[in-house]
Length: 628
Image (cartoon, rainbow, N blue to C red):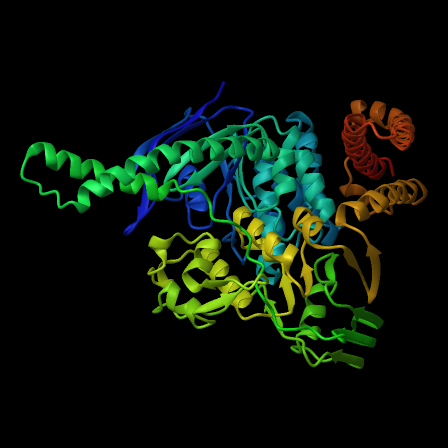
């Protein structure tokens, strides 16, 4: 068994210590999630594991033939390469062969009569047969397809940030390393791609370590959780749900231990106040003991209450209304005669594919973009706070406490209590000893958390959130979700995070493209339950009815191997069998009644069967092209 070991790893930047002598091991099939407040070193730890950064101290060990692939939050790709060359940019012989074959196909498509290209493709086909390259090629094409990467000849420099992230993700998955390191892999992925990635990682036979804000995703793909806190590492067996249970038990134990420590601390404090002087070795030792006790006591205090129901400006009867709203960009319809009436205390989630216009709607409501036609009405009492995807330029020469005090020295809660700026920083997970920190020393995630806090302290009554989960850690999201629960105004969120939407949205606007927007009353999970199955059945029907059109010159299409011919003769029966099995499972789920455990078991089986059916259909599509 291949083991990756990290022993006594220490890392800091200047005066900021991220972790101190942490030790852990990664076994062959471990699926580990790393969590912690932004700034605790999650991404730094991945970079150390990937060899991108060196620890200040400690040892990393693994077998000589151990391979590692790393997906960073902001991948650095070669903009001069095509998508194909980038995703197959690997020294592995298998990847190099696939890259050569795919490039030969593209060359022959551009010049079908070229004899040199024909001969090269024929030679590469023989190598693919001899080296079992077709299975690897099929796997690579499935990954590219599931991640929405279609134009393989496009230059990296022509892609958007989200497209680049998907290309980089495809690249590390295709390499199939011994250890996958994934930093926020679900950013820029739609629901279907996220569900596919969940299934892929669950089936992945090697190790994976993931940093992600997506708590449903984390729950599905992990069998171990690592938490970074105060420079220490805490390890929990199980998924995210098991971690929450174990952490609650640990917090209770810490509170009990804290009471004992608190009493001892009081005794030592009283002794120090009596004017203890370091005139003897015994007294010096006791003073040192007090200093250590003080440090431990302050670091292990129970988390502050998350009750931050702040008083906002009064919201009148009229809030926001769109009448006959129409907008298009570059002949692409975003809104088409759209109607929307937003009442007080509305909780709206906006979902849909990238580029369908979700963020544009928030920009219209905030006044950043004007409609081509139609009318936008904003109530006179409305005060909007807009958390955008772009990071506000913060004054790096200011300290955190000074920046927050710009929004107010104190703020009132809905219960009439007052909270100081320093207390608000603590509630947003900035410990008291960090309040004097210069903004220039904060991580990107910490800056976003500080910016969000300042927005909320401005007493808005309409809160617009554009992909807040892309930058905020799970702990901060919990604070924000609790804030939203008691927020007396309107909250409109654009997000692909199922967990966040389930907790914060009671109505959905589903952007389907070309100006079509569907409204759904209920949670995101409820919407998916009612729509995903219908969509899968629709895709199955379409794939059966529509025979794939030839995409390559016949000379460029590989002939079926004997094994593939046998598979082609039986694959439709397997698809029919999978569909029948799925129908039976759905029927059993409808009749399960109030037996929650049985319902959960059936739901898991349905998800597995859906994934099997999708894999069979993808394989059927590939084989049908060969059979032309």
